[in-house]
Image (cartoon, rainbow, N blue to C red):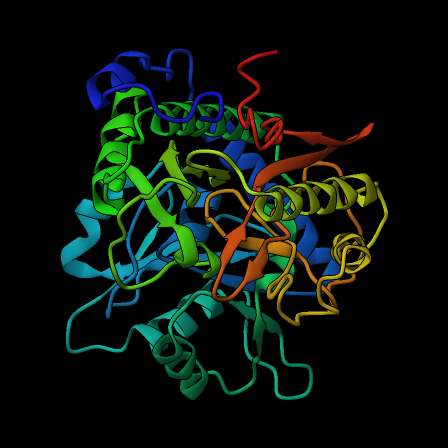
Length: 409
């Protein structure tokens, strides 16, 4: 049996965990105000007069106001200069004010009225008036539902509507020290859950039982629940996002577990792959090729390097071991990594075609999975962030197939 894999009961494994949230501090109002100022500076540089931030992650990121998107338009209007304002149904005004961190005027609409016309009317009052000759550029939140963008467009004669992503993604993809600290802690929490989970595996355990344990384990370290959980055994591990059936663990199976949690709006996302029992020569070779590809991607992650070059580095390593080429199987069928923060998948992406240069504060997954249909898959997923000195791991990559968590060191 590999080191750290099996040997404990569920209760014994849970007993190794404790609350890890001491000292965590939510992002405060001052940082939200700095985010707003940064967005406005960006808007002025790009010539964008205002943006609409829809309920959901963008609204929360900039204002600290948590509100879930629905069929009713709720969000914030941010001008390039001046105070931010909100828009919401009239019956929600007092509730919205109770959730506000950054205060602002609430523009209200009754149920029979058009929130889209109210949005335009608010823009005019805020000094962003329509102009047929030189239409002001107004960004619409990239996560807003089509019906919102479509409703605004019908009322927006004299305005040039565009995707607000040039502002929202620019700001959100460059994390502050406070964001990095929160992300570090949630990733530490999930890695501890991985270690405990590996120790409770036994022949005959079902993937459903393991998922239930991971939920309990995340609560034990202080998270409200798992943000997501994928548990795969044997041939099912060849499918990156899982299968629609439960599996039962057998000796010699590859185990692939991908899970994470969320605290103070920031998310973890870590995958570990190992073998229950003795690894075959085939499993060992693939596991080592995956580790080499993950390492090649990390080494390629240097300040100023385009994101797509990190993906290319991982694919070159895999192709040298006979996988691919490109997205061909057996090999890597998806991008090498994604940005992460308040959403589990954010900009930019480590993928061909994304020429965004790596900058300080950017955070990424590094997961160049090897999928071998009909046999198994191996995915090592850790995350790194960019510093003035280059890439820095949040969590140390898997050590070896015989000791994936480095417990014997």
